[in-house]
Length: 368
Image 1 (tube, one colour):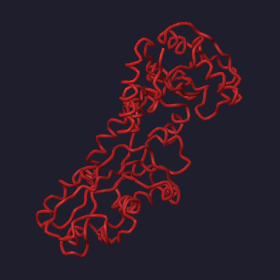
Image 2: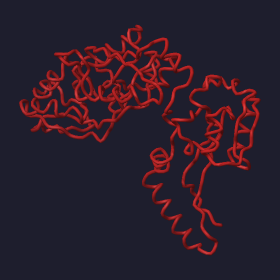
Image 3: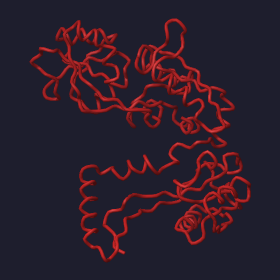
Image 4: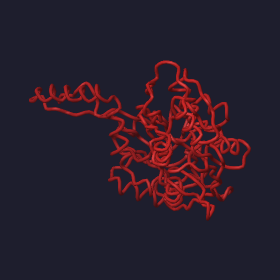
């Protein structure tokens, strides 16, 4: 067989356990000692597991199996096996929980030696794809293959955390639609965040998660409440590694991304650009936009105002050159843009929206 120089992608190998197994800890490899770990006979993951076990001083009992994945899953769920090592895309994550990644390897197209012409075409196509999008393989893997990134079950430490805390207290920025706001009549959360938490409360197999939401005037106020221990996590957050560390927090993976737009004067000769000295209007307490500006436009001068409308007025009067805003919030300011003769331009940049969690709270981070 002939093989191209570039791989199709990478597959990962995990140790899976029954979701109800509380004897094996996700944070203590020694709990695997003495346990029966099933791996397919003569498989590449068997070799990876043996190497991983040696490197991590894990003394488990390797059971070589020669059956289908469904049969192996039955052995796991019935207790015949304590754990099972296989490719992450093979297991039903509602019935088998991934614990430790024990290795990974590339996989390739294979071409018959009788058709070297196909190999040449394949090499050209794969190089063309990589040149246009170097993350293509990773994106395809995440979309079609990977199952372990968000476990469908909770581990014993995560269950214990929920048992102690009962509810996850979420602090959020008020008056920030379309993302989150407090309903004036009911006091309840509204916006995309409500939909997200409704889904999250029942998406973990065998577990109902309760959320308690608390509104704060600004994102900074929510973050301050997190540091004081009033809440368990804050939304929205977008701090880089250094800023998050200074605050004693970590950012979860992004819930979603938003395109960022600049609001400028329609007839302004100084059309939005990153050239020259730009004065950008910023809502006081909006630490996420501050972090975005510091990262992408560090030379810009920030002018602070108490509300979004005040920022827009400042742009209209020439006190500031622009306001940066999420594309999801453009509809919310459209009436002000018409009133103050303003328009929007895409920056071509995106910003993540994440939860902020206290540094060291690994159980909640994992749950979220």
